Length: 505
Image 1 (cartoon, rainbow, N blue to C red):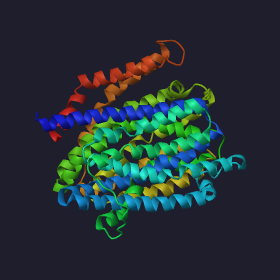
Image 2 (cartoon, rainbow, N blue to C red):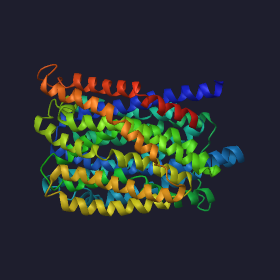
Image 3 (cartoon, rainbow, N blue to C red):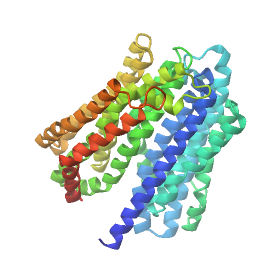
Image 4 (cartoon, rainbow, N blue to C red):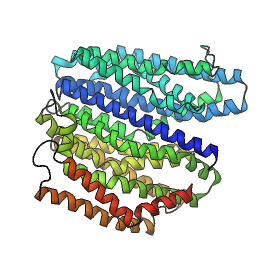
């Protein structure tokens, strides 16, 4: 193995560890928050207002960064340092200008915006909702600057730092919760300042790379103009899950107190666990997909996609089984303490279960969108996402009163699944059939390890291994996972997957 390959492998492992640590720390933040606030109206408020910077604004920042990375790479490779600095200065200046104007508008029209975000808020807490909106609206500016700066760091190979910027943010929020308790207004200020901190800790590296910034606006720069044109299609195409979660929380304000909070905790757990595999997979394969698309090698694109979905199916199938069987126990173990009661557990477990059925659609959103972006076709994911968002609004309007929290969460899974079907059919027209007979054969091969896993779970129900209690399910859960892996290993399922992956590499 050459040194370049070794360095890449070590970097990937290091970045994966840092991302895992960041997500676990964010998860600890949610646990501390749940123990202090439980599923109360204050939690509903925070989850609703925070969902904009947490989901929508972060999606804007991700889209900006995705478009900026190739442009900045072009300036580094083909232009002078002065031209590079002018380009990035102009980008930061325009983001600051437009984001500041939007923030000012958001602050002025905070009452109307709060009604849109949380239409079911009672008059008693509406004023507090408006205040939280005004406090957290400026995160649009800080989030945008943070993600663009992180993209610059990635171009210069500072992967570890760009992956770890959320660690100080989570520590700051956890500290404020432990010190100030249930002071929701103080928490709002800390959350906003935390996003600013994520940007500021990256600034020294920008200066180290000899970037010099001037507040100079050039509205005719072709790369900046093209970036903002591509921003909306990428944002809408890549934010289906996030927008569905925001819509869910808005509709939940019409239901009993704590429903929005339960949806927030359930969706956060779902995204935290599944994104470790899904986002990591899409990130790792994107360079190869881009190269195959550039070469016009559709056969290798099909083969790579086929193997990606086999790996994800192998990982996510047992996840879904364990959630179906142990959703109550998992939520109780993770959250049930302090103000988070058994009633909170029941509500959150339903949300967690409903959202977990979205895992197939979530995986397809991440993978298929990467293919279309590599093909430079940004509008197709956007149009399919918009169609599914309209469907989502209809389903939530129909289900939120009749089916409550489970109906709202399952409707997100339905919309993501429909998105996956439509995108798969459209992509098949672009590159050919990437799910073939080998995919069906692989699915049939998973029957045996899945049956072994279910046998352990069902056996533990008839012959309890640890008796009753909050922790009794952990042994059959772990044992069933081990049985699944052992059967898959001895039936050569694991070997065949990764041998094929090695040949693709």
